[in-house]
Image 1 (cartoon, rainbow over the protein chains, first blue to last red):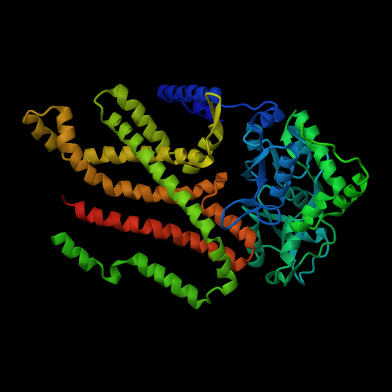
Image 2 (image 1 turned 60 degrees about the vertical axis):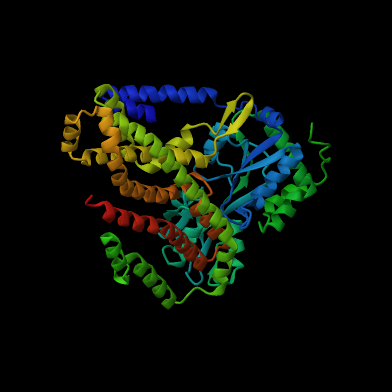
Length: 292
Length: 261
């Protein structure tokens, strides 16, 4: 993008020269940069897996106030993966706008980053087919607002996080007016300031919030979650080996019920879909030893 | 002597708009009902993480201004060259990086550079905070180059002529007559630039560096109390202010001191 811009805007020969010089430097830098091809090879070679996690607040992820160590549901899953592969773990904090880029450039090997399965995402990335949870959106609304169905949000201002996958259904199906904030806490602040009638975020976080006395005046009145979608681990496109290895690990977690336990412990309120998966796999043979 | 006298007089409270403003804000805030204990307790709990975050901001700002100054002086020197061929790249550098939004430069350095470099079989990580430092050093260098050029230009041309008539060469004039005077003149704008760069380090939170602002955001999402969210952003503001305000005061002191010399 930069190059195109630099060339098209430069009638000036010096500018062109600068752009060319810059390009050459970049190529030289890129040439020496590491390019991970097969994820599993890289993990084996370094005895370390790098997992992108989102630290957007509990229950998914946060940091320790004292040591700044990464904590939370995403981090525990990452630990489980590293343990199953028998390698060290490095968690990298990612944000919604940069997580795909980090995965594609190889900074992280896999993503456990609140990324639900959507059709658009499967075009650029591959994923571990067995989901580890199913998460949808819940709308936090002030009590007595008279909103009882998702359809009642038509034309009403609704607060969400930027880049949230709830924006599309809210706009296209229910015709809500979207106010997108950089993070969940700003969105909730706006809800309290009557900037919007509802704040729509991942359901587990909203249910955790309702347990706080501060939110006693609010409720989640809509019976069903918005677009409940499978939460999956994402890998780079075409990395079939790691995909298969991780899938076996996840199925084994469903068998042992470990995912339910981690979910309960972190306040995720495990979904019905997760319980069904446990029922499905509970009689499967245990994974012999995932370590090579 | 005279300047020192005038300084003591300047310490009267009316001359300190910053302090008065801070005090007034605090009073208004207390009058509006100071936040209860359950909001302050998490702030105390999170203060180690916030302190570490702010230390990173300061580290980034110091490295950025250090790198930017070295680079900027080199480019400023190029700009003073009598050869057009040497002046041109310097001018171009200054124009490009002075007129680009900082956030764009930060995004640029973050996503263009590799995340690690392979040197002799070892993987050297290239952390994001270092990329942000580079992203801030670029505009810093362009600004320092301009400050340098301005300082040299501010020395009356008659000094050059007088020195030349005494038989000094161009290099000698620069080294022994012009540059010593420039140092003093450059100091206030340079410190101003440093204060601005420090404030600019808050942009690093947008590319996922765990700086003060990012830590505050995680803290506010974790505690999830509205009072706390307001308080923690207020604390972030206060911390940046506490760091930048003395710099700006000191700059003004230096400006007054060197104004007519």
